[in-house]
Amino acid sequence: MYLSKIHIPWRQSKNSYHLHQALWELYPEQGDEQRNFLYRVERLEKGIGTHILMQSKICPQQSEDSPVILDWREYNLVFLSGQRLRFRLRANPVKTIKDSRKGTVEKKGKAYTRTVRVPLIHEEQQQAWLERKLRDIAQLEALIIQPEPILYFRKEKEKRSGKIRPILFDGILNITEPEAFFVLFQTGIGPAKAFGCGLLSVCRA
Image (cartoon, rainbow, N blue to C red):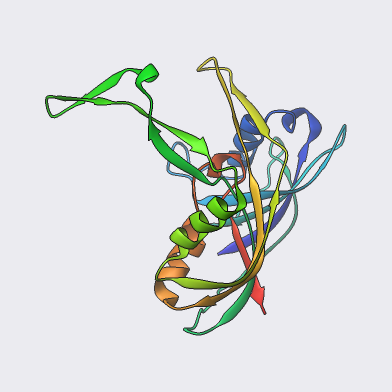
């Protein structure tokens, strides 16, 4: 695994979708393969750019047109049962509901009402969402929940815009299933990973 600090110029920082596209430039040999990195915006400076913390399975490659790699290091983590860790996670807690306004979709000859994702607004719902994601993997010992500004994005090719409501979780957890926790650590938690959600950062408690 690799942990990198990245700087993205302001012109690519105005739109979260463009920011994600810029990060792909650090992996020129990946093509259209499945994304193998997670990231989180650490600081956004208007007119200057965005500082990113990125976790990836392969080492990013600096090129003339890519964002600037400020620093990187390779690391291997071993998780243990009963281990206590401090963590930080920016996530997009949502639930899926049926929405008849979206019409229907046909599966195996049957028509089903389309579903949409809606954000979880209340703290108790957000905590319950995180507890479900960690169920049988880790237990929460302490948790601080901070709402963050709504994140707007636009996909020009699809002529579609949208928004997400990111939440910042800080706390302490206790690992109960190390192997499953490592998988979760690698793959991230929740949706909107293309927009900087899902990266779980940990350190010793």
